[in-house]
Length: 115
Image (cartoon, rainbow, N blue to C red; front, side, top):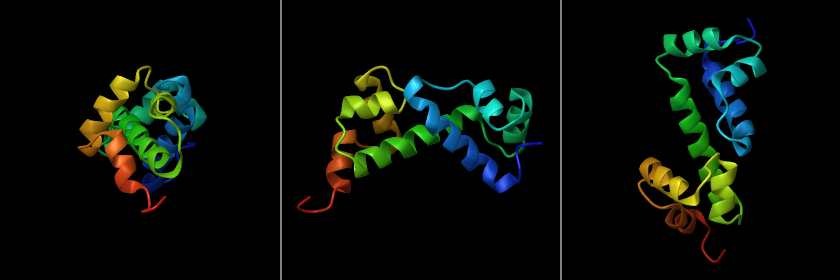
């Protein structure tokens, strides 16, 4: 199978998801295809590890959002779009759920002093 070893499966799914997010949330079948397997097999492999596709999508969105907030000057609306949200308000709510703070306060805390 094209899925390779257990340890990297989760990371590989998250990377593939992150690469697709600006076009919206990718279906599991799209990600499975990119990994050279079927959606059913990917679902089963994730399930065997106690993972869910939706959980990995959320993790990929959160990682990407945090990186963009930390490392770029992109406006929040742009980051919302790049992480697969159609509305900045939905992005703000999701980010607050993930990080316990707003994207703006996360960015202010993450940016280097004087920078």
